[in-house]
Image 1 (cartoon, rainbow, N blue to C red):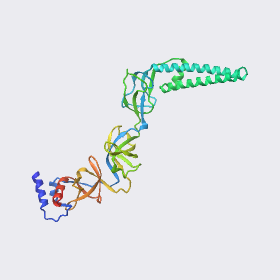
Image 2 (tube, helix red, strand yellow; image 1 turned 90 degrees about the vertical axis):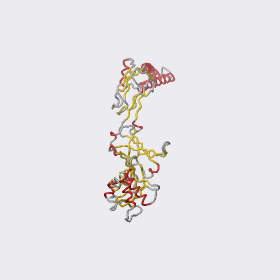
Image 3 (cartoon, rainbow, N blue to C red; image 1 turned 180 degrees about the vertical axis):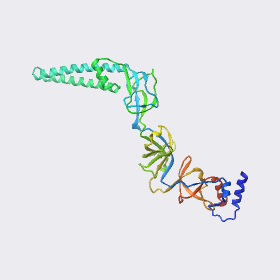
Image 4 (cartoon, rainbow, N blue to C red; image 1 turned 45 degrees about the horizontal axis):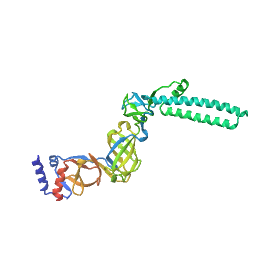
Length: 365
């Protein structure tokens, strides 16, 4: 095969046909022998960046960290990672002596408030009848207001600990203390993380679960600074591999320290169920109108010389080298601009043979 390849290169270099500096004359047999494959130039695009790396993230306002409201022993976990939960659904049960203490404080505050209310009502009547001074009436009024505030504070503490309003009222009426605290979900969503196990003794404010609403989602996109000039908030963002579409909602004003890229954020409005938080994907972003025609071609179609990048366009006599500008270079495909009509066929295989032939004819690198 090497001998055959050398033979055709020699035939090309010694051909007596008139050749332009950027054209290569080849017969169909030579094209086949050199393993050159062609494909139609992809449909013209107007201002699109393709193959941009991105990561799927959950919007901050849709992420919930559920922590232990009080210290205690984790008795039971009722959900696992990946489970879908509803708002108010029990997630775990905690045995908490601190809950008993908070309930006892509420009962004491309730008793004090009832006593202060009775004293205030009696002194108010006595003051109206002229039996006691106004100052004594005002003292009773102040004591009643303080006791009421203390009762409201104790109730709020129990609410913050996760005790439902109905259970608080029942506990007040029956004076029965309960150490079992049920931790419930604050929202509909999916359990992303679980950080504790049954039997653990935990302090207050220790994270137990991470729960998130998974629709909509965000994409954090890393883009080279040079590629952001034609971008505007509201641009269409797609993930072709998953049929996902959204829009650009933020363009970062600073560069990341590692790779000096601008962080873009997109809101996924269509197809979010196809993505997973933390997933890495490649996205396409439309740029501002008037940025010129662009084409998304395989990287194998590009030939790099010392000072330019070439695409080989098939002609009636062989191929013509056409200089192009790379707008964005991806892992498999690149977005280019150049002087194309849009109906050309370009070489996508065997480009190295065409490059070698061109270098021999032109006498350059």
